[in-house]
Length: 255
Image: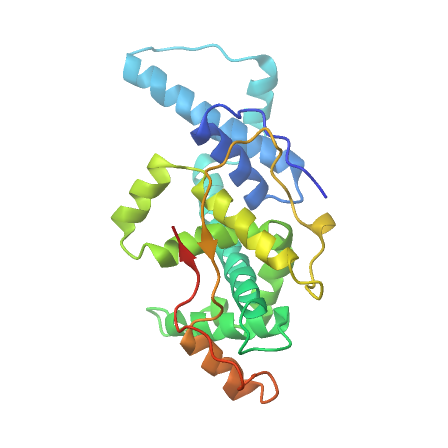
């Protein structure tokens, strides 16, 4: 399995930034380096500005890398766009794991998870200009899955937190106090996934954190799909429900 090369293992905020570079650019090492250089340089400039400094010196190698980065506004826009794309892959992975652990549903598949995701995003399908959002199309969601599949468990950790903490202020506080909790959730979801021999993903496909990264310990219990998603599967796949077994109505829980 591929293992991330994380240098800053003692500072959670910097560790999170390095993990995020893999999540945004899972197949592009050069772009990951640019991403990290860009944000480190921004932080350095801001620190110097606050200190009242008017000049600073950077290594030639860093300056060369900075010169190869697009205009900051474009880079920031790309960062936001890729974040939104990755979240979609995370939603698919989260749904797939919940389906695998739902004894009311048989024959779990990525295809079904994508179908549920389309249904999930259809509520935001109409943009202010009246046009259909591309995020609610199966072809787009399939493209995003292919693009971020190798880090989808980590994006699923992000998605889980977004759904668990509906209040954005609470979510921001959790992320600030413990920047790596999403990685713990992602690792736990991947472990749930790996319990099933019929799962469609292999460990060789998924980026792993090195043992040197100390992530928080959590207790995650997966009960299966939410009721609305379970009913959607039953309505669209007649042979996918196991009516003999009943499960709790609540989905995954975090302690």
